[in-house]
Image 1 (cartoon, helix red, strand yellow):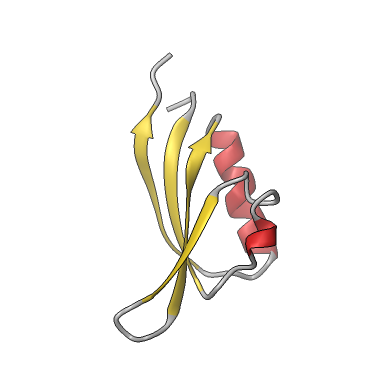
Image 2: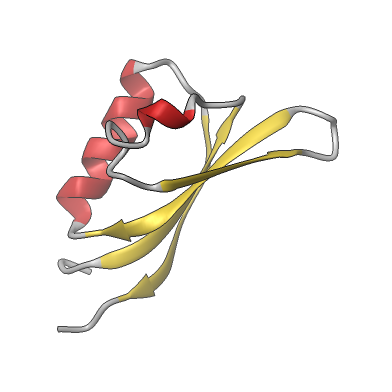
Length: 77
């Protein structure tokens, strides 16, 4: 898991799409959860776990609750 991988991160609330660059260029989609709360899904290829840590640290700095982090596909090189 030290190389590129596709990650899916779900956070509470609706993020501004302008933050995509700050969040590793990940694609954003917004949906309503079963409780009618908004959830933003970030999905995209990150080069390594250091980049993942950078995205998670940025979310922490913005005080955005992380609901889930999932490695969707590891890119073997």
